[in-house]
Length: 235
Ligand code: URA
Image (cartoon, rainbow, N blue to C red; front, side):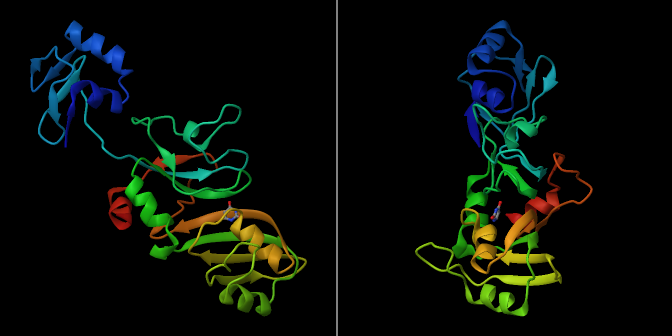
């Protein structure tokens, strides 16, 4: 991929375009060992070596983070009042990261944060049939009848019924624990599905999305970069 020297450095978090242009003019930037003073110089991200103040700046077209989303943080890129999931990612290079899909403010668990829009589409489109698995604690006794209702698709007040979903009962009683697999991501979908069978979700956590499974060593609020294998599994 080819792009301008100042954009290359801005994408990698070395400052604003105007700040970077000043640094380039001062002679802080070398390409393949030669100081270059033209910000418009085209850089080949695979071939060229860019140094900023003596430090090699490797280009990352995409970044991928797995976040264990904590409750109380909104799933957005920026918000005037509230802390967002993207604010939690401290050591990102790129400033175009976004969360793949929305979890409610009170939902915890697996969230992929990336700038790969094509991948996000692949994971989110219901047509692609990517499984999203959730753990839900609900008020009310979950029964085999509920399993049947989930598998047939539910009327949750939208134009169309939900796609068939898998419901597994972990324990059943006044408070029940369940695992649900869906291939869509409608607004409040799991909560509305349980409401449709007369139950209330009191805790919700996403466990996996396609091949990507939450790393349980991450406490809520913690994150890590995806491994190469995890990225390959998704792409
Ligand atoms: N379904 C919900 O109701 N909430 C979420 O955050 C995710 C799925």
